[in-house]
Image (cartoon, rainbow, N blue to C red):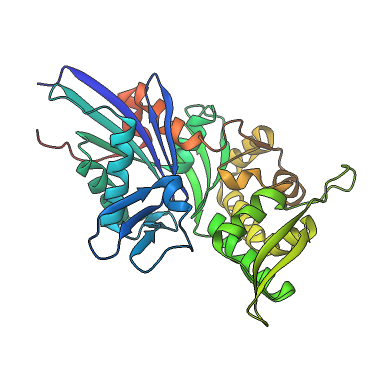
Length: 346
């Protein structure tokens, strides 16, 4: 017999995994990366420690990002990583404690992919598992009135997917899920550096460029809007180490195509919305969440291209995790917001 219920929200993201515990908030925020011994398969590191190993490992160490494009690409590694994170975030549950978990997944995943996520979470000891689409979780986490008849619109730009949705009366009216987000932006930066500077860089360096000087729109009225940074890599022609100095204009050019895909996705979602809901969105605007929302000038560029009022959620990076956790405050609503898995037999 269970005397205690512990509510947990998990944002199982391509780039980062976040865990939210009721009454405690976000207790874990780590990269979705795991390092194991290639021969013995022993777990060596997870999170930031494993991410620091990317591109630097000897032959006996295997560093894996077990989620690609928002879905599980390596079931075993995802389960091992998630178990390690839950063990770190939660004290050892007792026989009298029931673990109730909500997991955020991209809106475009299939039922098979949802079941894979559910199975991984159950392996960590969860008694009840609810699968919630990330745009709904992000909307709840960022404080939007998802139960209102007044439609609201959100775009969650993560590492593997960009999920765009229009929500009304506790449900998603129309949505678009693009497997074209942060990782594709990194790939675009790598390709640009190779083409324009004959410089070969890795994924980690591309991520640093995006975070430090990445931009979608340059406002010439803002002083010092053009930033610069030194980039280190390998010269493609000589094969020797090389340093190049690039600016925000380089980042703007590199990110032009992947950001255009996101803007087109937002336009397509609006085009599919019923007229009355579209009228609501003109008033309520669009809210951006996820790491991609923080790219300089993205909100301004979307405003120019769509005519919508665009704002960035204060908790953009944690919105999905907080939304999954907060949704458990009402079990009746969670069954409306999400797809509930079958109960685990105990």
